[in-house]
Length: 355
Ligand code: GTP
Image 1 (cartoon, rainbow, N blue to C red):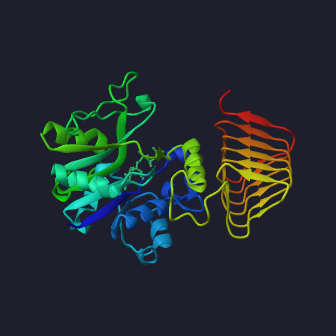
Image 2: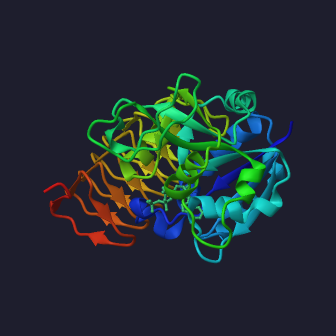
């Protein structure tokens, strides 16, 4: 039986601002390539060639990079929403591009190690209308949870609570029977979590859960984004899209790291980057052409293209926009976000978003 994939990439990525002011979230450089490259590689490895991208925010950027998909062994199509249609609305909006019986749908901001072949098998064996990938997480309180019965059938979609009855959550990857997609109302925003899934359950549809405890990360926040990028570099989640060997650091074309500098923890130094003597870069993602001067410390942070971290500055758990200068001796601590182009003068300014 044939399968096709839909990837939802139309969100504004508000939680990742200022990085998403210039690029949509799925196009942010993640372990050296656009985030979406890692997902497309997994889809291709599952034997799926036809992929439809549901786009809205900064729609043109995707086609500029991925083209018709042939360089990636895929047949890619792009569908642009005039107004954002939310998740289910976006799936409905691409229905006329689909012809397979089963359609794999992915949120375009999830890193996951789920076995897609096994997910599809589960869907077919259960003869389900929709099958959801459900992942077991250590602390489910931050998510809505999705209980299943002993046959794996979904019994409810529960809101976030302090005492979730199960530790399995919606992992943002589904198999839809194509006819179910056609039944989603067209031309208006519809949410899969709030409207489509609860509606299907109430109508008696067969909704199956595929539960595992594979690697799973929603990269929607700066802390999660930088962790995901580092995990890919370290090989915690293998990806054939990684443009270099697995290791403590990924150095892209022309990146220069002084022998007296330390770059570890799955950090990426983008093309043309320079890390000077005595600098320490740990678990961080430096986009292209970033300069980290002598003795500076960059930890768990994302640093936008062309930014400069001057000598002795400390950047921990922060997001530094494109073209920013962090002056010598400044300290930017957990949660700080600096908008593109800002120049922080030398002199030991200390900012922490937590206080
Ligand atoms: P935040 O603004 O930070 O919440 O991020 P987001 O806009 O990406 O929203 P969210 O993380 O909830 O979205 C989950 C997935 O659905 C992401 O891959 C989004 O790109 C995608 N998505 C969300 N809304 C839309 C939409 O209206 N249209 C399309 N095509 N995709 C969407």
